[in-house]
Length: 348
Image (tube, rainbow, N blue to C red; front, side, top):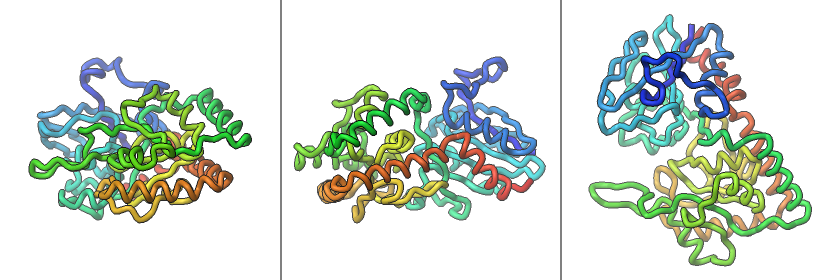
């Protein structure tokens, strides 16, 4: 028998009010949708909820889990889950959170924890935490806002894109809108505050003002307006978050061409440079991927961008292949794929 342990917020879904439980509807996270689809794909499987609380103990008695949830550790709900084989008392963790040690660090040395599938998989980021590297595997990363991808939105994006592409009216400026605030920094070490995570945006605006359309919160758009604007650009730049950012995954799901630094981090479903996205090579980066030298990175971005906008047909093919891969990344499709891994690792 399999059991999926899924975390809930005790304030939104009080443990003692059993009639208040989330449904996998249009308002639910893709993690919850995935849990329900995986339940349908695995033989003899059920979902059980648990309520992690900061400063209290995390207890899952059937798996002999009893650990303290530290005060410093945030409670990110619905973005991770345990998948257990109950007869053996063994489990794997699927964690799509941005913070790599937030939940998995509590359990990664438990002998009953056999694998950890991390969405922000980059072994260099784990080096200071003494993890069991043999358990770590690339996981899944989903867009934060699944409500965005209605059929109406997808159809409108495709129609806009097709019309502009056929008439050669796509905007060829480098396009990126995303957080570049002063407090969004690479990290802090012994009181030293690191550089901004996306300092390369400032350099692009300074050195190439007529060739870029980039900005931070000053240019923030409602999400659907952002998608529509992205559809008018030949290429959309993606910049590291932790290191993945929700933006590139949203654009992939919309079938729009993405350009990003060549990935050193991995996913369960591989993403290949110049197949699923346009790769910017040879940029020295911090462990979670921001450029160490933003000026060098800006020049590299512009060099690659100028080369690719000369080949609009190939750019559209990159967008198509990125979109095809994204369709296998949906919760319902990925549940069909991942069930085989669950059965292989945990047994039947």
